[in-house]
Image 1 (cartoon, rainbow, N blue to C red):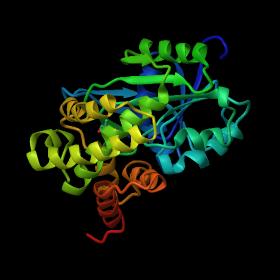
Image 2: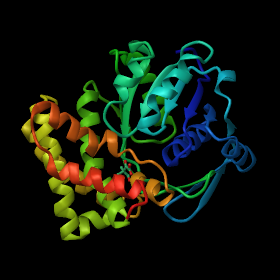
Image 3: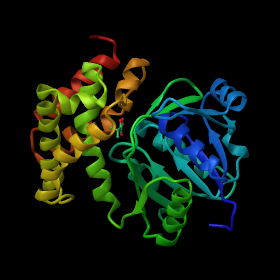
Length: 310
Ligand code: KPL
């Protein structure tokens, strides 16, 4: 990447997009927020990003927001869009001035394959995050749980990954590098596979999954089934897969007051990321000849909710 200041574009202004853009802008980085709707761009331009901390305090961070990406020149694009928008976003990035580095901070399985279908491998960084954030409006976000970012270079680009790590650390985020992002992405997906559908179906905050025995057991069973697929695919060791249930419950407690992204999507009548989470497990299972009834059932239930049938 070029010398300071980095020109950073955060693509997608959901809860995580707003949180990241605000944090980086506050730390002095030149940040633009690229959104899809003109109306949201206008709201962000006019109000800035409002970040509500756990203690209720509100910080207003002025931000440059636009719905017109072809005008932007960036050194780094941070992708926070939903997993079903990854391919479209990758094509949009490919048309930007110059080819920036791209850091995916998204949920779900399969984002990396979609990015590499369009963008050069050595420009792609992958990341996951376990922060809890709830979007309150087009320009307001509530921080609801401390987590961490884990990032790494897809094409082994450790130098750029280290620069990005330093940028995030400077913005006071907890962040670490990993040389095994494929495993990290699966471990994070296993967390979402337990928490997200059950919070959305039962309309509860994350903490309830760890607190209520029947939800804890259902979430654990979904994670266990998905973990076995990860083991059969040679991605996680049996021990790593077994540890995923405890990790999922730990994230429930760390983000106890948060509404999961899937619950937020259902509440707003939007499409969810079920296809790249529990739905992906069903597909991988099918290709291995393994039945995954728990994840199939959860996928079906979320699809019913998406379609407004329940
Ligand atoms: O990733 C999340 C999500 O909601 O999608 C967690 C970490 C579970 C926070 O809610």
